[in-house]
Image (cartoon, rainbow, N blue to C red; front, top):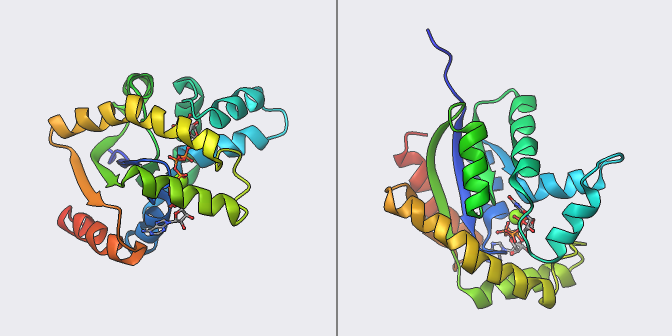
Length: 196
Ligand code: UP5
Ligand code: MG
């Protein structure tokens, strides 16, 4: 019999919407592998001998989206190296370039399930990221100047991708406003209803 393709859920939402926080809870409860595109880029930036370090840092600080060839390869490598078959891909695809590149490189190799969309008001997004920065996140984009750019990129480039998935009936929308535990109750329902 043909081997089962890896299953993929895209996790999207504004900066600080709670994607990473909820992914950790999903991993615990449903044994998915969590791959944050942002975390993979930050790791690559720090990797000795990386040819992309400077490029990645300037994109992240400016809230711009790194060319898909870089991000998609990091994701594919991480998927392969995990040896697992259920993936949460957090913070990707976030623009048309990302979506086109993923489609070219990966769509035949995986079974895409749905987009988990954390809908969070802009002021809350900013508040959460600033608080995280003040608590010592060390992230070079947790400052007001970078955050303005991240929000702008999200509105201009990422929301249209979410709308695209909405139009083809592939979005599970979650209100990201309540406490993390409250939010997770609704996340849990989505995965249980999807058969996990
Ligand atoms: N928090 C979480 N949930 C909460 C709740 N319900 N109530 C109160 N507080 C809550 O949470 C953020 C903070 O809020 C934390 O302190 C948390 O405790 C608290 P988190 O779970 O980290 O939110 P998340 O949505 O993951 O926020 P993050 O900042 O990671 O989102 P971004 O999408 O901005 O960051 P990402 O790492 O994905 O991308 C960073 C940059 O990398 C991008 O701007 C871009 O430059 C680059 N990038 C690419 O170029 N391509 C990619 O494909 C991906 C990233
Ligand atoms: Mg995150």
